[in-house]
Amino acid sequence: MSEKVYRTWQPEQAWLLPPSPRDWLPEGHLVYFLMDAVRELDISSITAYYERELRGYPPFHPRMMLTLLIFSYATGTRSSRKIMQRCEQDVACRVIVGEDPPDFRAISEFRRRHLATFETLFVEVLKLASASGLLRVGRLALDGTKIKANASRHKAMSYDRMQTEEVRLQQEIRELLAQAEADDQAEDAQHGANRRGDELPAELQRRESRLKRIREAKAALEAEARTKAAADNAAQNAVREAEGKEPQTINLDCVKPDPKAQYNFTDPDSRIMKASNKGWDQCGNAQILVDEAQFILAADVTQQANDVQQVAPLLEQMEANLTDAEVKQRPHTLVADAGYYSDANTQCVESHDITPYIATQRLKHHEELPPVPRGRIPQSLTPKQRMARSLRTKTGRATYKKRKGQVEPVFGQIKQGGGFRQFALRGLKKMQAEWQLVCLTHNLLKLFRHAMA
Image (cartoon, rainbow, N blue to C red; front, side, top):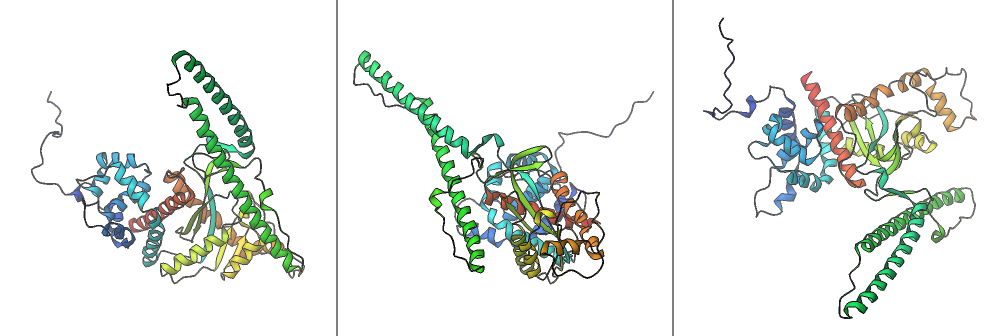
């Protein structure tokens, strides 16, 4: 029998001619699209940082680093060390970085240094989407999702327990100091009085540092409680003045936090939230406002588990983004679930010349709105009743029905498709910046898929 013939395999064979990176990936690959897209972005806010100092070793090119960061987030890699590994092993990353791959410190430092520019880059991507004619901003959809913070819920402590722990640690420190003093006196009697005996025991140092952190956490919760009380009192006084009543004053020094108020020692800006049906975790509440084509027009992260206070900030950000991106279209409708309803939010949406369709009660996915009553709208209806009636009209039912298919798939694409289920950065400002990066990556992927289609 003749021997089977295989293709030649000589991994040690040297290249006779230098290969072209364009030959390593198929035409139309995501990498080539992102490299072309990043070339169109205005990154002067990034380059200005490096151009302040002309001396020193040349830094990595900002467009290369930005392309690498966006591609990594688009393909589910957010750790700077794992991005560095991909630069060594992944052909797509090698096409981006060439023969000079950055190490993880350079990647991490680039992301940290330019966090504030991601909001500007988000608008730049919206310009690309607008120029491509893909934006359809007539009907907006607003929704939020809980994303795990870079912190463990086991590192959180309630205000009530802080008070108990503070007393316990103070007692233990007193006991340790007394024991240290007794040991010093015994050693002085044995070895003489010239020996230094002021070194703190390791156990005492640990308790003192823990006591210091607990006191700082208590002060932070107390300051937050006073700020909230002052804001609530100002709002109540505004109502009282409108009703012709005398305003009331409160003693902020007597305001104490809720005994169950939580403080996380790893990331104090994160909050305990119901992340899913599986339970509670340290999270940030990530918000998006999307158009009919599922492009994200505004994005934010808040510490508040409730969505009701997010309508006005997202609408204001959306208006600013559309103006900066020179988008001529203007929205006429907004749909949102019951978590966003309040009379004030309805007025806020209408003040932007947008018709709101905000659910006034939660419906399960298989439930339909009840039939609309016939006849004229009674003048005695409250704003909430008017909104509920509006949702039960033929137009309202048809409009609100599109909410699930407009905004919820975006979270599926980001969390399930992109694997983004936990923030890599800590602190509210950093979580907001990282969410902007995730959302601009989502918009670029929408542009890429349209181009491929």
